Structures are given as structure tokens and as C-alpha cells.
Picture (cartoon, rainbow, N blue to C red):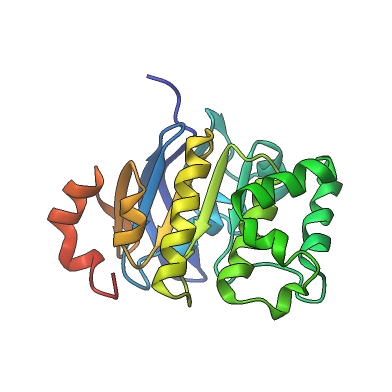
Amino acid sequence: MSVPILEVVGVHAAYGRIEVLRGVDLVVPRGAVVALLGPNGAGKSTLVKVVSGQHRATSGDIHLGGVHVQGASPEELARLGLCTIPEGRSVFPNLTVEENLTLMSYAGVGVDAVLDTAYSYFPRLHQRRHQLAGTMSGGEQQMLAMSRALASDPALLLLDELSMGLAPLIVDELYDTVAQIAASGVSILCIEQFARTALRVSDYAAVMVGGRVVATGEPTEVLDSMSDVILGGAA
């Protein structure tokens, strides 16, 4: 078996005295889409922060592509191929779409390559290229955030609550693109509260409750066994 792109082993993390992650184990195989599901307060976003170097674990181990990265900074993880699209979309609202994308060229990727990647995945961004990012719809801003992430040529993409605040049709469209991105060879971990759309494009699923992963498996298997937990919100 090949080495997983991400392996989380026995990770604990806390905010002050409040323990949020209580021994998380999670594997993302290379080239796979894994949906990490669970209700609000399960610890999903804290796990993203720990994996991406934004919050320090109190114990446990994290391996990225077989390299032990526990305690690594976000910058070091980015150099190893980890890219995060955080909850709430991260674009520069007072810059145009094209200016947002051009900024990514400072990471060492040619401007033409950045723009080609963005516009091939999201033709709507080409139509909006001279529009200020802050005046676009939430779905279009999410497309821009995803495009900026892809410009870094990630090995592993963390998508934290991609669907938040978006209409179901837009969410379906975004997850269709997630499937295309995965088909290009990028491994993806989708953190979602709302399950069905994420499961549709996933190879595997994991469910978090109370700071632990309580179920893993293929999407239909997890949906059948954990539907009361993962379909608690709009699905």
C-alpha cells in the first residue's frame, strides 16, 4: 500500500482547559476525496486548524506524505503541499478577481498558469475578471478562493465547510468541481456539516462526534450506519 497523503494518529488538542480533540485518528489516502462529517461542535474545524499548523496539538502525531509534521508551521506545511480553504472564504474584497489571482503568482507560479487554471475550472470567473471580489455572490467568492488555492499546486486540499451560506444548486456545482480537481490527482479532505453532496463525490467518509472519529468507511456504508448523526442538519 502507498503511504497516505495524510495520517492523523491519536491527536488531542484543547483551548485552555477545554479539550476539543480527544484522540483523533484519520487517514486520507493519496488521490482520494474524504468527507469528514459531524454536527456543530464535533471538533472538525479544530482538527483542520491542527492539521494546517494554525493550532498546536497537545499530543499525537500527524504525517503528511509520510513526513512527520506535528508542530510544523503553516508555511512549512504549504511547502510540503498542504493548502487550506478556511471556513468563510478568504478573498481580498477590494481587489478584482484577476488581481486576487495574480497575487498568487508571488508564490512562484506564472500568472498565465494561475489564470488558466482558474478560468478552466470556473469559466464564470473569467466573465467576472474585472469585478471587485467583494461585490460577487458568495458562491463566486468561493470559486475564487478555490482557484487561489489551486494556484499553489497542492498535494492535499483541505476544504472547511465549503457549503456554508450557499444555495444548494451552487453547492452542487462547487462539489462537481471538487470531483474534477480530485480527478487531476489532488487529494482532498472535505469538512462538512451537511453530508449528502459531499458524500456524492467522496471515496471515503469519516464521522466526528465529541472530539473523536467514531466511524469511517465508504460513503454509502457510513450514511447507512450514521444517518441520524450526519443528517441532523439540512442534508
